[in-house]
Image (cartoon, rainbow, N blue to C red; front, side, top):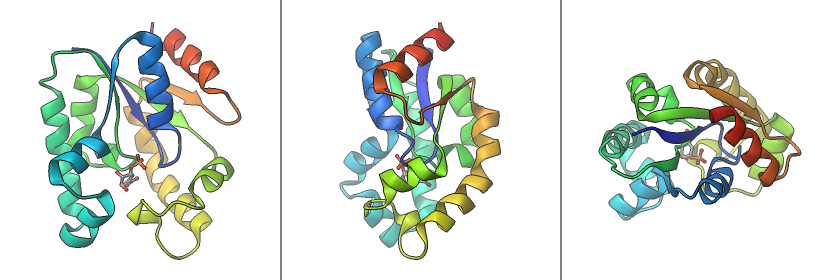
Amino acid sequence: MKHIIMIGFMGAGKTSVGKHLARHLGLKFTDTDDLIVQEQHMPVNQIFAEQGEAYFRELETEMLKKLMQAEERMVISVGGGLPMTQANQPLLKELGTVVYLRADVDTLMERLKRDTSRPLLKGGNLREKITGLMDARESTYEKVADVQIHTDKKAFSEIVLEISEKIS
Ligand code: S3P
């Protein structure tokens, strides 16, 4: 089953773009964070606080393996840190076409400045946190991606058309 998988930094628009793309293609949409939250009956923040990040990363890998069994083609948005777990990289490739949504730091700042749901961005200087994590992650996102899309200042409809063209 060749799904379409959205990767990228927190706030890059994986969920929003993924939902629009799924509607455009007539596919189901799903999101690994949502699936984990449903399964664990607690928000991501609480999983991090009570069980730690390493446990959350294990849940992500387990969720990817479960998605491998899906019989319906889907657009799948994955958490921003999921591609950083090495074991997940071949799983993502096997799962389908990987689309990296890029957004620059100013766009991410704007989208994330009032966010309270992401444990890795709590406290301290937001711009420094974003640039630090982005520096650590960008080359992995690029390595795992089949397709890269710049999303800054683009409407969802434009991004969706661009992805559709690049994956067809
Ligand atoms: C994370 C991104 C979040 C969520 C968790 C950790 C990360 O998902 O999985 O807070 O490490 O980048 P989104 O990318 O959907 O915000």
